[in-house]
Image (cartoon, rainbow, N blue to C red; front, side):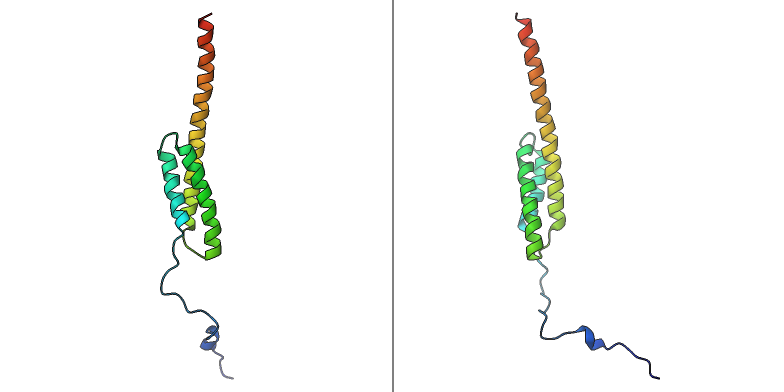
Length: 114
């Protein structure tokens, strides 16, 4: 009985597959934009709230395009989404604290004049 070896030609189907591209898939531009805006959302005071929201929108659009077009940049989109959420939450909390403090102190000052 002869030993059976796998046929090496079985794994190749010529004529039906597209040859591999010599260039790697491009990185999604919206993912890069989401990352840059996410970092800016954390570092720019008070405008970070609005910039963070824009970063979240760009990241969600990047996820959709990456899935459809088979592009790279998923990690960049995730990082932009996380930074955008952190920036938005951070400055939302700061703005809420300022509004509460202003409302609390403005009520005390009016009592002193009467």
